[in-house]
Length: 333
Ligand code: NDP
Image 1 (tube, helix red, strand yellow):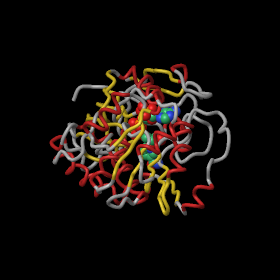
Image 2 (cartoon, rainbow, N blue to C red):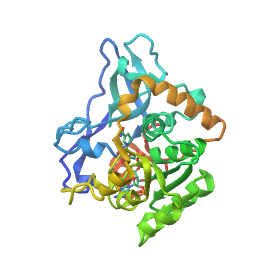
Image 3 (tube, rainbow, N blue to C red):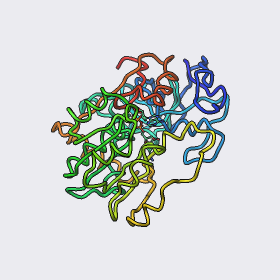
Image 4 (tube, rainbow, N blue to C red):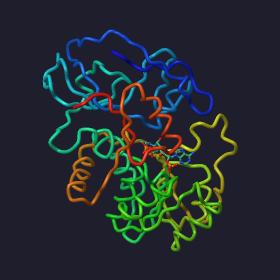
């Protein structure tokens, strides 16, 4: 079976040379474990942090080790109670065609509830991040203006729609006209800004948010945050979910900027981590599944075919190649 290993640590933008495809023996499950055949593998921005040799909320990978990823797969062999051959499961496994997983760390996926791939996106980690990040940290009220960056991504697209369902005016940024059209024509965003085509980002944010901003759900940081902060309203909330604009920086050029706005506006800035919501994971998924069933929430997946293309799919995240959740299809279900 094949797996991807970390060949070297990137400096700045990661490249294909940082990954090595190797063939290894197919592992065998011990007591309490199952052997999983990967159907879909997730690639996620936080993996950039794990390629770096530095403390972060996720442990760094060692050079020469296989990398880990969210996977949806089929159980081929089970040595664990509660799992049988043919079950579809999801969990954190390897960037691999086959991997052994601890039964305690796997969750069963019900294929009757929808495409199994959604367990890595709207009905998985990104969906839960959007749900609790917005509702718990952002705390939107009806009539608020909610601003979300990377709005056409896996997390951002769900945040925007949940904000709309909460009665907010929703504005977002994304990096292509196709994404802007999806946000405004299909997902119900009130306005969306193509930040790559805008010379005056501050002006565009001001125009799109005539009543200021009450909740900023930030996936990106950098210049978008610079444009957003001066528009924050009194007692607004800023949920820092991600800072992808900075992940490939070798040095962050300055400290956080424009903080004086926060004094004047008594705004609250709070970081969030989806792993803090383990206990409320199921509640978020249940609500999200219902919204999808009722066509209140729509989602897209950007599927790259073939395990050998997993690094390309990952690198594409930093180019904005994905609309919705970026996935790698490894095997037919
Ligand atoms: P996305 O599906 O949103 O993919 C990343 C997107 O980021 C790209 O499509 C691209 O879209 C945008 N982007 C990439 N580089 C830049 C840049 N330099 N400047 C501006 N935009 C950029 O990924 P996810 O939804 O999985 O994750 C979104 C964010 O949330 C990430 O920062 C991630 O690290 C974070 N996250 C945090 C979690 C937590 O627990 N705190 C959990 C999950 C995710 P575009 O076309 O708009 O440029």
